[in-house]
Length: 75
Image 1 (tube, rainbow, N blue to C red):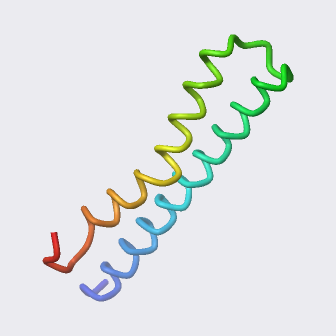
Image 2: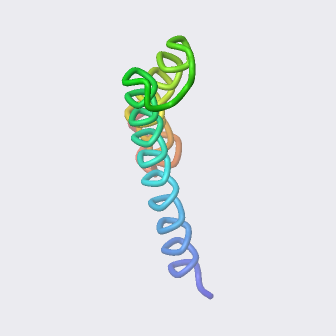
Image 3: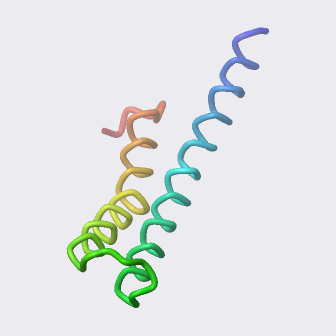
């Protein structure tokens, strides 16, 4: 493989990881909603924890990862 193919494979992997993080965050938020609606037998503090972690994983983590992997020097 040449360097262009390596870069493409690396970019695809990073793209998939960022989207997997977003999906996992949304699943955590849905689990928190299920806790608040008594569909999951967990205490309310667990629902709040799932909600905060899910929001962080959905909105903050992909931005941090994309900035970390950015080839631009705009940091």
